[in-house]
Image: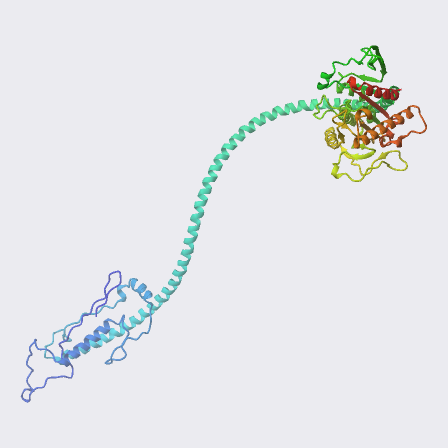
Length: 635
């Protein structure tokens, strides 16, 4: 049987299988009767042994093989029976491989004796015919081999126990190896994670090193800045000490100034009180001056010739304005004889008013004369300014201005509104607060119409009523009263009213005003620190043009308009005459115009009438009528 050694190169001694030529015990060659006592003849060596002899030799060789392979083959059950391997111990292949890989000491392997030749006990070689001796020798050897086999069997059992111990150890080592493998895998993963963390930490370290480098530079710069600031701080400390010394000095001066301020406040209070008294005194004296000038005043204004009128009339020979007297106006008229055309001479008509404005006077010069009356309205007195005269004499131009109005051509209404708002702003530091409300209406054929509302939107006819039974103040219900805060808002209202006013063409004027337009600005002021309150109304009226029926050739609707206009103007004259004569009954209710303006015509109210006349010589008779009416009012 051939066995291989382990990986280290050692080999188990090989026991070769040999055919024995010894005689088989119990078998003997038959002799003849004549040859019993003769020794057996020598047989040829080339003679083959009989079959039984070969079997005996094979049996001996098999026993030797079993004895030599006892370390790895299980023991036989009994001698002479067929041997079989019984799996007393199942060893895993991996464990057996691990055991085989381990080096086995040479002392643990039984040394098998080489098969000896058939020799006797005395060491001499037996003869080939001495089969009995050879058999005896073989038995002796078999018994020795059996002893060796028993000894080897014991060694085999010991090796099995060692093998089992090695298997147990191998299992333990296998479990430890699996545990260590999993631990190794875990450690490898942790190592990878640690490596990743190390790389991140390396990057972070590099970034931190860069930041440290930049911070080092910044620290260097900051240290330089610190040194500069330290030096600057030292300088500031020196300056601070100087400033503290100056502050102490300033505090002393401040105490002195506080005393002076207290004294100044006391003086200011006294000055404000004195200023208030002066303001009230100014109002009183202003009103006194206005009353001395007359609560009813008349200004005369002659408009200039228009371009187309200059072609018909050369100059103003029938009008004379004395150079030394701006209150006088002289009209001259050529009288003709009744018989022929001989001239009798010029007839002169002298008129005197509070102020006469020639055609060369501008709108600004005219307003300068009425500015004091506008101031009276801001002081709390009712003021009424209206323009009277024949149609086409320039009343609308005087009161409102032309359609393409400019700062030079602004009429009395926009100029008065501008002065009122400017005066209100100047009185604010003195503690006065003002609220303004505007309305604009017309009186057409003795009916009231709201000019701030378009004609399709006009409702029922407006009526004049008292605010309350205990008050003399009048108002018109359903009339639009608009709060205004600036002169621009008032100018927009004027544009709306001008578009809605009633005008028509007559024989004397292509665009004649067929109604009385009335603009009113209600001025309400408070001085809460002085507990003062004032209410006044500034009324600016553009009267309709007066006409003679025989010259206007009015018919139908124009005739009724002319009659209503002349009636209201006559009533206005009667009211003014009654006021000047201080009559007990004033006919205010005879006309809607006088009834609406009754609070602005009597009492402490201020009234100014512009009498406008035409420069045309053809209108001399109408001009004389207007001047005569104005003279009565002025007287």
